Length: 168
Image 1 (spheres, rainbow, N blue to C red):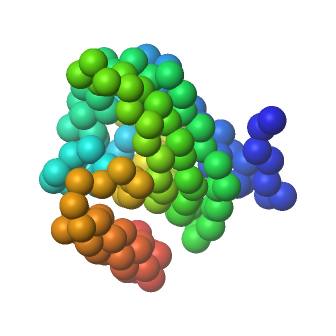
Image 2 (cartoon, rainbow, N blue to C red; image 1 turned 90 degrees about the vertical axis):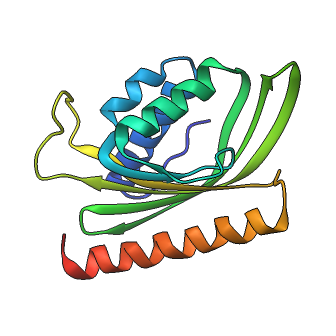
């Protein structure tokens, strides 16, 4: 059953996020260029370092999508907070995929910052795009990585406060 919000702007944000996730989970990762801002930064549950720049993010999601067979992807319990032209979306996810001859079950939480721009992105019909994303997975390799991901989430939240307060 589709998730509906009590605010049409939140419904629009959720539709963009669902389209973005469908692009990479259903085999069309190149479509992400229509969603990722050129200065996007991502922290994922599978990469050791942060990914900087929209092209690098598209490439990373594309490599993951092409190197796996995704059996299942589901977002649950989304929360959308609106701050002017910026939305902060948090949700939980569960997924199952084959990689390297193994089936991997993974879940976690994701924080995504989405902005509605004053002008449309070059090469895109959309004026809503992703600025940053942080993923915390339940399947972590070490306590140190957990701490790094948590600190990255705090940094991203602090970055959002500066963004909203500066009016950018």
